[in-house]
Image 1 (cartoon, rainbow, N blue to C red):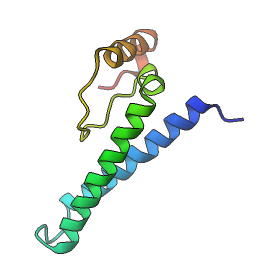
Image 2: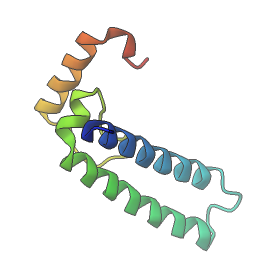
Image 3: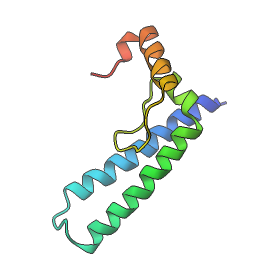
Length: 98
């Protein structure tokens, strides 16, 4: 049986991958001024809002597992999130990102 914590972490990983993939395709698009690129940028905003809401709803689980809000996130990091992330990396120094 998959735990709730594992499901949250897996879903967050998928959401981050979607945002990163779309952002990379927008950056590498051959015609950045086209309607297609503009629509993709609008959809990227929707995905970023979705990932922000997901992080707010599950911030306790995510921060206790060393996950910060996505780099494109519009969330400001709270003191509790930072403390949880630092505790995680103190317990797991090999998992710290470079």
